[in-house]
Length: 128
Image 1 (cartoon, rainbow, N blue to C red):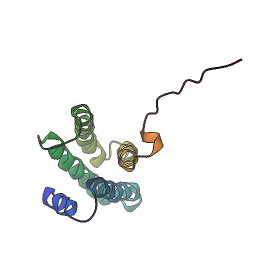
Image 2 (cartoon, one colour; image 1 turned 180 degrees about the vertical axis):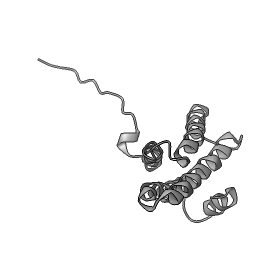
Image 3 (cartoon, one colour; image 1 turned 90 degrees about the horizontal axis):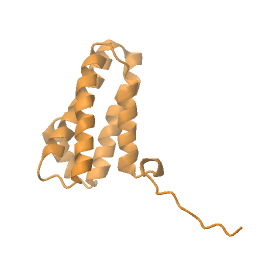
Image 4 (cartoon, rainbow, N blue to C red; image 1 turned 120 degrees about the vertical axis):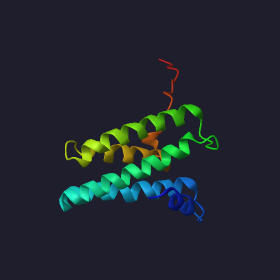
């Protein structure tokens, strides 16, 4: 996915979160199905996923990005890891599962699911 395609997708009626979620869903599914299709499919799926993360990396590094600085730094760290790990995955030296897991965790965060949000423990006063 090129940066231009990503930006064009953002101009649709979807919110940026919805667009990002959809992109992660597409590339995660491709990763999940790749091993059954053979090594060429694995390389393509990993390369496409890597391109998604590189596109996000460019966006995260932009001064125009409105995410909190700490979150941006954490996501940039993940993007750098994805880039490095992808090289081994494309060579067949590493499992696709960690890439799939990271993508799914990002999708949970974009969806805002309870598992992605850390809830503060609630303390109840005991009256015994």
